[in-house]
View 1: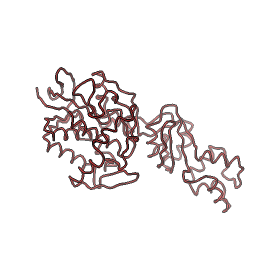
View 2: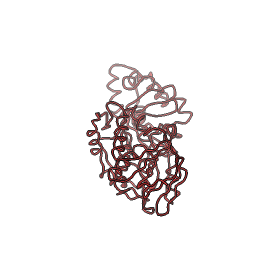
View 3: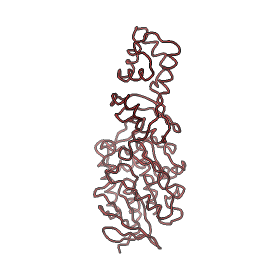
View 4: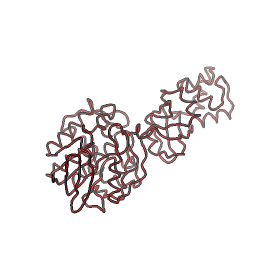
Length: 390
C-alpha cells in the first residue's frame, strides 16, 4: 500500500494548482489522472493561448444554485494572485476584449508553470491511471490500475462532462453520490444553441454571418458581444454566454441594432432615396437583412414605410425572439453547468461537510463562470483553497 497525505484525482487546472499548493505546505501529494498528458483542457483553450483569467472577476459572474458560495474562494486567491505566479515564472500575457487575459506565446506556458510548481513541491504525478474503487474507513483507500494507495485527504478535481473527446467523464459526480453528496442537474454550458427545422431552413444559408448584438435568455442578464449564425443555429460569444442561463423550451431575445433605433437609422438613410433593403444593408450584411425582412413579411423594395411597419421593424430589431430547440451538447460545450452541490461543501475550504477529508474543486462543483477566463479563475481559486486545507 502506497501511503500519502493527500491524493488528488484529476491533473487539470484545479488539480495541478491544488497539488502544488498542498505540496508546498509539506504534504506528501499524489496526483492521478486517467489521461496520458497533463491538462489537455488548458492546452486547447483560447485557441492554444489559454484565456487563463479575467481582470474583472466578480462573484455575480458565476452561476450556482448557491450563488454566494464562490465568494470566499475568489477572495482567498484572486486573479491578481494568479498574475503574480505568471510574473514569477516570466510568462508574458496580454488583454483582449472585456478583460480577458491570454498568454502571449502558448497555453503550454501555463501547463509548464503548474508542472514546475508541482515538481518543486515534491508532488508525485502518475498519468494513464484509472481509479477502479474508492473507499473510506479512517483514511481513503484507492484501488487503481497502478496499484493501491491511501491518504487522509482526497481531492476530486475530475472536471465535468464537456469535451468528452479529451477524456471528460462523470467520475467525480458518481464519487460524490457514492459518499451521499447531492449533485445538481447537469447541462452543457457556454455552448452553441440549435434551432427548430423551420428556423434552420431560413437561417442556414446565412451560416458564417456575424452580427453585433445584445443577447438575453429569459432568466439571465443581457450580453453585448458578437453573435454568429451557423448551419445548426446560433453561436458566437453572446450566444455562448446566454446558453448558461437558457433552459429547454425558453425563448432568447436578440437586440440586433443595439447602437441606435431603427427608425433613426432608416430616416437618415431615406434621405438618400434607398429601398428599405438597401438601407438595412448599410448596417447588416445584405443577406441577413434580406432574410430578416422576409421573415417579417415586409417588402425590401419599399421606399416609404407606414408607422405600423416602422413600429414592427423597431420591435423586431430590438426584440427579435427565437425559441431554440436545444444545444450542440457536451461535445461543443466549454463547461458543464451544475455539479456537486455547494450546499454540501464548506465555502472556506471546499471540503465536504459530512465527509471529513473529502474535497471537490473546479468544474465538478456547481459553480459555472461566464465566458472569458472566469472558469479558469474558479479552478485556480478552488484549487488553492483546497490545497491550503487538505
